[in-house]
Amino acid sequence: MSSTNRLIADIAKLRKEKKAVILAHNYQPGIIQDIADLTGDSLELSRRARDTDAHVIVFCGVHFMAETAAILNPDKVVVLPSPTAGCAMADMITAQDMRRIREEHPGMPIVTYVNSTAEVKAESTVCCTSANVNRVVASFKEEKAVYLVPDQNLALYAARHTDKKVYYWNGYCPVHHRLTAEAVRRARESHPDAVFVAHPECRPEVLDLADVITSTSGMLRFAKESTHRAFLIGTETGILHPLRRDNPDKAFYPVSPQMVCSDMKKITLADIVRSLETLTPRVQVPEAIRLKALQAVERMLQI
Image (cartoon, rainbow, N blue to C red; front, side, top):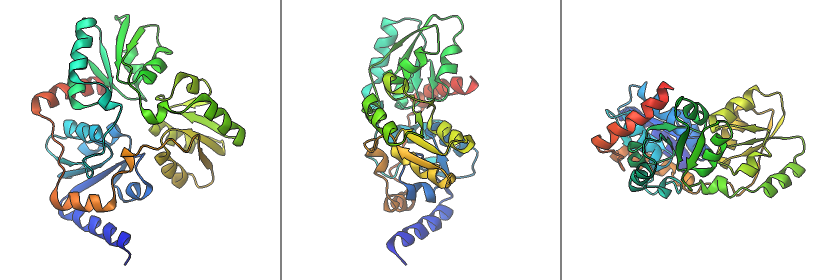
């Protein structure tokens, strides 16, 4: 038996013994996605985990995602196999920054992207995802302005779909922010028949060139339902694995090979085995923060 197959066998055995569910984000390496019980985006995974009888959640993603799982699943043990798997964008804003925003814009709703820490969520009015940000902003019927954190590009995308004034924090996802319009034009020259699908975390000038703008889950749905045969994908390259797996008769190309998140590639099979054996590193959210963050998430789910 190869070392890889041995690790996969160990995971299967330990998963059953520990009554664990393994969640893998769409950006994880293909082999991690393949051994997971559930794959998807971070909020979708955390919500689906609530419906399982698992005692343990092994979250293969980055730290804020495991925190979101802990917020929504307080009765389960949540572990993140690589403790150093973080998110640069989530680190660009703090709870102290949020309190200062509230002081400078009293009464203004603060819409927080789920790609943020629990402490930041706890200081928010409501959370949003890249899929529902426009609906969340529109849900404030009387307010003429909202403040969106931490992603400036998502805020600028939302501003295009509302008459409200959208203030925003100057954070960004380095992977999406580094994609340029010139890189998109070069990719389209190489694949002239491909549909360009972009994530809302991309720069506005990149979104201007997109045929479709949607979240990672939206990309997976669009690819399945589309009659097109070729696609340029404008998000982290990990999503190419499920796209190609689920649509073997279609072609998918990264709009740029540089769209790789090193934090999303840190978790290995050996890390998962170790986490299942030890139930560490455990991710816990202090109850006072968890309850406040949960309110912001639940407001979004109601919308």
